[in-house]
Amino acid sequence: MKATGLRDKVVIVTGAAAGIGLATARAFASEGCRVAAWDVNGAGQEELVRELSSLGGEPLFRKVSVFDAAGVGSAVEEVVKRWSAVDVLINNAGITRDAQFVKWKDGAVAGTMTDDAFDSVISVNLKGVFLCSRAVVPHMIRKGSGVILNASSVVGLYGNFGQTNYAATKAGVIAFARTWSRELAKYNIRVNAVAPGFIATEMVQKMPEKVVQTMVSHTPLGRMGKPEDVAEAYVWLASDAASFITGTVLSVDGGLVLGT
Image (cartoon, rainbow, N blue to C red; front, side, top):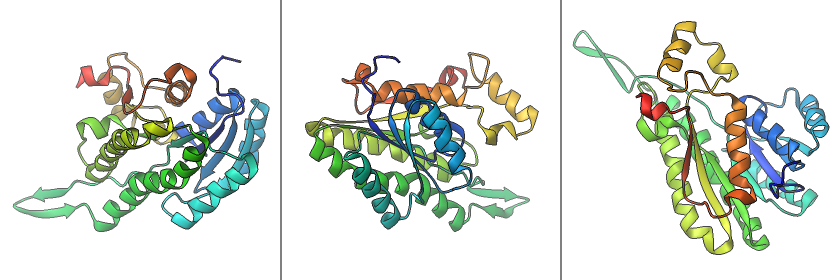
């Protein structure tokens, strides 16, 4: 096992049932961590717990809606009651509800992003990060240490057509990281964000091949990232190797910025 200083650390991963969240839960379990895997989807939780155990971790699954303040608070208390601390919080849960801000056709409005599409993404991707972090931080302060990592996106840095709501949330969690890093450094709590580029998750793999190839063509390294690429970035930022890093954004994008 690598000397990351993570063995027996208590790690909460939101959105842990699939994609980058699942890869992240696996990566921390492989480090010998106690992993609290949260997801709004409770299907397959027994299999997930078995897998994380087989990797060397000590897992706990909880069905959690991150925008439900009471549910988040209860889930955090469950983790603290079981393991006495929270060392790392990975704010990974997120959704998309894409639509053009205002679609104009033939001299008239042909469509807009709806209130529901905007509000639902804000609730999960932005307020969810706020609520989870707010519930965890007092426990980190009492312990005198902690790491919070927010899932941003290259979209949060550069915007993207049809993603007004998503881009706003991914920019917002960067602002959270930069603000909280200033407020919480005196308690030895580090806060950073990770900004993935095009990652081959289940959702992306269902896209038309032409769309996928366009994504690859804009990535200088010539491939899509794997969920494990992002998971390893989280592990590194949570580890002792990154002990002097806070308030920053780590892009895991295959050079996408260079290709735009």
